[in-house]
Length: 382
Image (cartoon, rainbow, N blue to C red; front, side, top):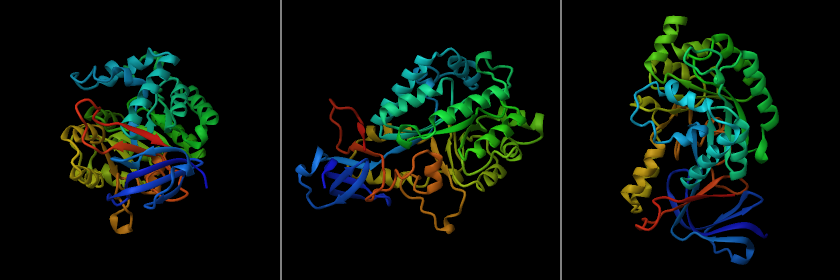
């Protein structure tokens, strides 16, 4: 058999977090055809990469991002809360189609360099351009439109009627679902409960469920959101989402800072969630798999600077597991080994290296970097 790509003499990160050295990984038709410790001749592949000192690992997933905000990175770090109403949403409202495309392209390039091969886009304007950037760079993505039908502080350009928003998200789904050879999934976006009426939220859930696709929403990002729901609906945000039928196995919620014990219980009934939290997270929602992988890499004498960079990209993500460990689920690796969590991240079969799997692999330099080299470089291998 003639392979398309051969990674020779590489280290492989296994699902249990252990690393196997001196491996040959062959790819054919974008699928892993063979993993072996036996020497595979260069003549058996159209392209050969000498991966000495490099780690081949499952591509990581950015579980919540706004690709159209990349040009603002680092500009708002010292601002006080509620920046989304004062800066982020107004900034998004000024973007044109090309702005969104180049911002998404920048995000994709930076993500690939960090070993991220899939992302969940929470939404913005001109999401067809974000999809274009993802397809061109070879990434996997779950892309939602940002939909809002209310909110006194929201700029007019970002507000839509319920009918307008749903029609546009329906059209995005019909046009781009499965694009990029199946790498693209189109979700429905619910920006957050302060900017979406309950009737609108219910319709979002109905449209997403009818198409068997997901919903991406911000949830309990700050106490004002909880207070708003209690004053207007006599319910906490999670309780409101349950009432309108939005909780389910295809829901991604981000931030989840102001969760109560009851909120966590409700979320735990709905398969798996990827959560991005900006502050202290309850121990119940911590990702229990990342530290093992970090420890193994640390034992291989990676520099402290490398760990700080990698941790800064991943520390905000935690996996809420809906089923108890007693159910027999395996939460090892980076927290994406179950079918549900992979589905929510829009990246099927990326975290298991085996013959025949269609996996996105990140090739990471595992040697201590020199002063002349970047701290971390990676590439997608297909």
